[in-house]
Length: 386
Image (cartoon, rainbow, N blue to C red; front, top):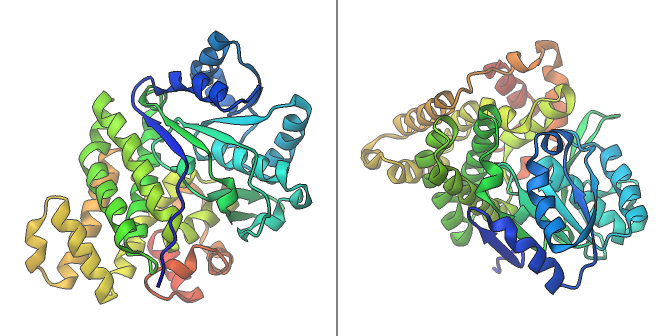
């Protein structure tokens, strides 16, 4: 059986790596840039740290900064119009998953105008043309959108997060500059870091995991357990750089093998209550891992993780103790960076559980979960996380 792996062409890592941007733009023959970002980054000066290097090199650009934290269909369609009017031939996405995901949607529609309704891009896409070139500069250590074939757009009318999976959207270049990530507020650094951990853990246990994806996900898990707390609480420069690497490595894996029902459930919290994605994942991860651990093969995967993050004794623990220990370590890491919320704290209501569960049943991440899950299971999981 063959295994397909899709990665981007080129990546730069390290403090100040954004200085490589002008040379790459010029070498590739691009003439006009559309910078896609969000207002908060534009207002606090993070976006300008990228546009300054364009200014110094005399590269023309326009800025589109109307991206929401949970980007919407309108964000994409508005961005397409800005892109058309700008005459840009390359998109530079500056931000977290929201900005990069919006850039991906714009990119695909620019070269596949028949898909301009956006809704048709939901799920496994069959677009014909490679998207407009994207260069991605992440400012958070979480989504790894700069190296994945996925993007998530909210359909506000239906209150659904559309998970779009399309190899034609992958950025041609990623620049992971820890200078840009160092400006994150503690709350965002914490939630995006837990998002990266969710990617790595779900990717490690998903049904489609393989030797190559295991390598990426295990290394990401080790780095996150080692560096997340000091990156968030101490703003340690090395830890911030290592978290940037960890989330990227996790993205290389999960982009190719999928995720599971933490994401199926988190997507609904984001779509219905506008819950930040990383917070939703952090809240749900311990509860869902306890559920998944009841599968003996998954408990063995947990054992392997524990043995690599400071618990070599896990080799001799029974399955239930492995599950309890792993869930406890996840919860303690989340608490150490200040995430202690429940589903109730982010606005969920018990009377909504049936609706949330119905939506989760349709989520594209659900089939990758190692345990089969019913609507009633989803209701119970939301209730346990309440």
